[in-house]
Length: 295
Image (cartoon, rainbow, N blue to C red):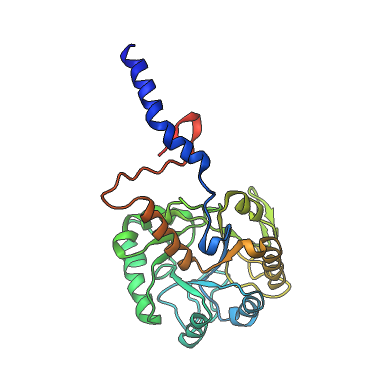
C-alpha cells in the first residue's frame, strides 16, 4: 500500500466514529428545549415606544430590547437629518421600568455619527462606559449604527472593550455556531426602496428559523399607528402586532421569546463548553461547500 492510500484509509478510520456520531447527534435546542428563538430590538429608544410598542410586548409576553445612543438618554434625539431627530428619548425612570419587565439594552454608539477606525475608541469603547454610567446597568452588546460599514472598525475594538456580541444589520437568521461578533438582524419595515425592494411580511424568516433551529432578531425604531415614521426603517404598530401574533401562532411552545442579552449568554456558555480552553476544540458541523469537512 503506497503512502497516499495508507493516509486515506487511516484518515477514514479515524473519522468514521466521529462522523457516525454526527449522524446520530440530536438536533441542537435552545433554553428549556425550545427549537428556535425570536427577539426584537428598537434602535435609539424614542419615548413613543412606551405608548405604542410596550403595550404590545406586555400583551404577547415578548421581551423587548433598546439600543441606545449613549450620549442621548432622556433628551431629544440629536441627529440632524434623521427622521427621528428631535424625538424625546426614554429617560432613566422609563428604562428602569422596562428593565423590571425583562427588557434588555445595548450600546448604539456614542453619537450615531458612524463608526470608523479613527473614532472607534469614542463611538464604541467610550460609549460603553458612558451608557453604563447613565443607566447603571452592564452593557455587553454593541449595535452597529448607520450601516454595516461600521462593523469592521467596531470589530477591532469591541472585544477588548468588554462586549460579548455585535448586532449588525446583515439580514439573516443566526444559528448556534454563529459568530457572536457578527450577528444578523431582520429589518421589520413597511416598505424598502429599490433595488432591493421589499414590503412588510409578518412571516419574514420565521419558517427559515424553524428549519435551521435558528434565532431571528427583528429590528426597527419606533412603530406608530397607521403610517410609519420612516417606511424603510419602521413598520406601523398594527404591523408590529401582526408580527407578534404570527410568531406566537406559528412558534407555539417551540419558540423561545428572549432578550438578545439572554441568548448571547446562552450561546457563550454553549460555545465555551464545545471548545473548552486547553481542549482540542474539535467540533464537527458536517460537510461544507465542495465536500469539505467543517471543523
